[in-house]
Length: 128
Image (cartoon, rainbow, N blue to C red):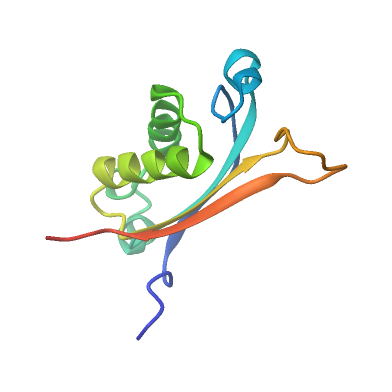
């Protein structure tokens, strides 16, 4: 079986948001920083050959969808937040076939000297 996550892609990294997601009461009250890295699998032949934004997907539009999905509802798990973002992106952009999203929580309330807690989801568009 061929790898579903190959081919052309749009990549956005280090999209920063401030949110109130998390299990603990302090997270709901104080909030914290989150960072999103995305890869969206889509055919980039048309924008590459025409140099016309209207034939592709605007990075600004992707950001707007991610921001709205991130801020819509407070959730306990970053896995659920990431899934909401994926669903919103598939809904907004019909030409996206697959998405890899990493949601990073650099100030997770756990005892770690450095680094961050993060999850990564790999999703392909479900067609019916």
